[in-house]
Length: 382
Image (cartoon, rainbow, N blue to C red; front, side, top):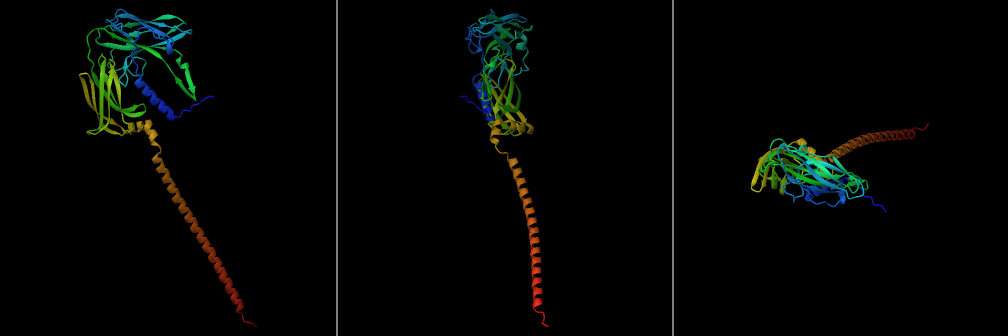
C-alpha cells in the first residue's frame, strides 16, 4: 500500500522555518579530524598531509606560517573505499560570518566585506574536481601564493569536498522532493607574521528587511581587521525617533566573526506589522573588555513597510479576511438594495395607479349602467 502526502503552502512555510532552525542549531564549523573519516554518506574519506610550516599538527585544519610572495603546495589524501567510481567537487571559499554569528568556511552566498584586502580565492587555487576509481587513493594538490607585500593578521577560508551526484539520491512523496547533501569542509588559516592584530568594528547600516520571511530590522557592521573576534555579544534596542519606549530588542551571546567580514544581525519585529516612520537603534557590541556602541537613526518608508508587510508570512496567515474588500462589497450590496427598492417602489406605484384607474373606470361603467336601468324603469306608460 502506498502512502501519499499532499503539501500545501502552509507545509512549505513550516518546512522553511524548520530549515532555518536547523541551520541555527547545526552551525558549520572547521572539521577537526586529522585521521581518515569513515566514508559514510559522503562516499569517500580524506586525511590532511600537514606541511612543515603547519603551526599546530594537533588541529584538524591548515594553519600555516607563510612569508610574503611564498608559493606552497597543500596536499589532502582522498580515498574511495567503495566499489563504484566517485567524483568529488572541490570548492574554495573565503571565511564569512552569517547572521547568527557563526563563521562559515563552506560555500556561501554572503558577499566579501569591503575591508578585505586579499581574497582567499585569489591566493589558494586547486582543481574543480577529482575522480577516484573504486578502491583508489589520490592526492588532491592545492597551491598557495601569498601576496608580495608583508601582511599582518590572518587570511581565512575553507576547502569544501562534496561527492557529485548526491542530488540523484532523492526521496519523492506526494510531489515533494528532499535532497540530502553531505560535504567535508577543511579550514585554512594563513599568516605571514606573529604580530597580533586586534579586531575592530565599524557600523555600516541599519535598515528594515526580512528574516525567514518575517519583518525585522537589520544591524549591519564589519570586523574591519584581519583577526578573529571571539565571544561576541550583541545587544540592540529599537525605539521611535527621540522616544524612550523600546519597540523591539534582541540580545545574543557567544558569537564570532571572521577576519575582514560583516554580520547582518536581524532584530525581529515579533510578528507585528511594519510601520513607516523615523526610528533610533541603540547598539552595543562587547567582546571581553572591548566595547563598541552606536546610536543610529534610520527611516522606514511607506514603500518598504507596504512591501515587507505583504511578504511577511505571519501577517499573511493572520490577515484572514480583507476588511477593505468586505466593506466595498457591503457598500455595493447596499447600493444595489436601494436601487432595487426604488425600482420596485416605482413599479408598485405605477401598478397601483393603473389598478386604481381600472377600478375607477369599472366603477364609472357600473354607475352608468345603473343610471340607464333606472331611466328605463321610470319611463311613462302610453
